[in-house]
Length: 328
Image (cartoon, rainbow, N blue to C red):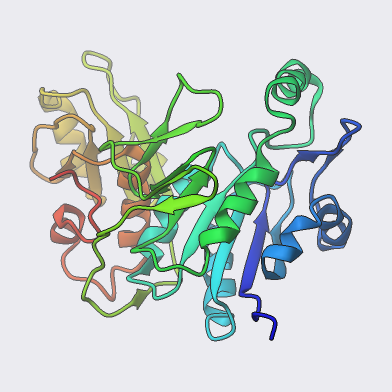
């Protein structure tokens, strides 16, 4: 008796560019493109009973609304699915993975994100890069990335993960790897959940939270992001921030903000996060966090503000190590 194929839902939200043997590039701009796009990868149907879902097109921006749409699609199909694979834009993949990690806490089915090495359909400025990738790797990496993701999409993982190149990484630990043309992403703590070697080998002994799932469907986009430079004044007033629900400040490490800037924060009375990955000095009126990636810090802020009615105090939530986002 033939083994029943696992049912994997494939969510498409950009990052779908791939090449065929003639070098033609295919991507998904609308739901009508999915059938032709999948025909370029017939091996996918061998691996699973694939259920594609259109979320957004290749040239659309990946926004908080797109993340909410992903969560809705995942929760709508939870009972039917053996697992979920999300294809989205490489330039937003780390934010997307971090956002889904907070929205789908302790989720009981595996969610794996991946992407092509090239996003968007304006190829004029990417022609040389595409040619180099075709010569060295035979394509844009998406075909292999999806195949690897499908191999483990029905196996348990603690939280959303990113499968890219030869690495499976916790989405809350992923960072760019500028030194590696195949593995564009690395783990912030050097730990990988799996590696590709004649198949995907999962790490044993992964930690699974004993807590029940917490599913959130809202995340806020209206946060003002400010990069601070010591000695450079902020040319902002309270009127400039009236449309925003929070303030996220990227600070320099090891030194506090100038007194004048601390005074501005006190006057604005917005929920404020001050962040540096290495270290950040606490100040009155702001939540100081460090020890996590910038993608995690920002998306956690967006998630916490959007769900304030269901959560405890904003400061304690931001400083709590909810899903292992902070380094030990």
